Amino acid sequence: MAAGQFNILADQGANYVFYFTYEENDGKSIDLKDYTGRMQVRRSAFSDDVLISCAGNTSGGGVTGGGNTGSWNPTTESGVAGTGNMILNASNAGLTGTNGTTGGVFISLDSITMKNVPHGKHVYDVELIAGDTVSRIVQGRFEVRPEVTR
Image (cartoon, rainbow, N blue to C red; front, side, top):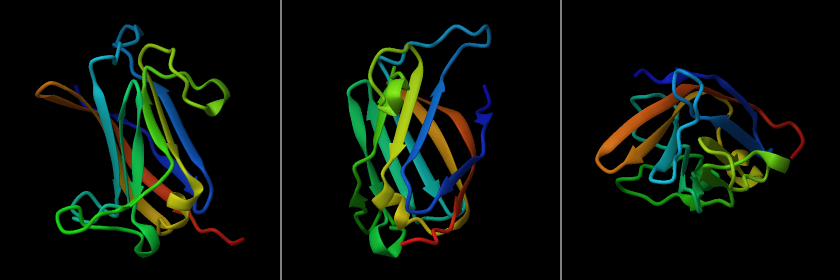
């Protein structure tokens, strides 16, 4: 099955929350208890440098950003840990990502990580992994509007 298409518009220097429910074609939510998830944002699909990386499971996860340089190459460098999160089977109640909604995917990016993302049009995708099976479930443009007040 091809990944869904969703374009994101985010503000540089502000927290960003992305929430959606992963469902079958008939609208039945998919239980994600046996999955891990990951998301990356890059300048282009062909770029080796990562702007944001996020991973998690039903217990949560973490976010890594590029720090002051805005990006890093994972084969040669380490990014900068952020305070964001990815939670699977999550609810969006209060935009906190609490557990409780089958198929819910909650991604939060903190303001410090977002401050260092260069403004402009980038690309992202979200993948779910179960054993040896990797499924890309959503992809699109990740556009960041420049921060004025800093």
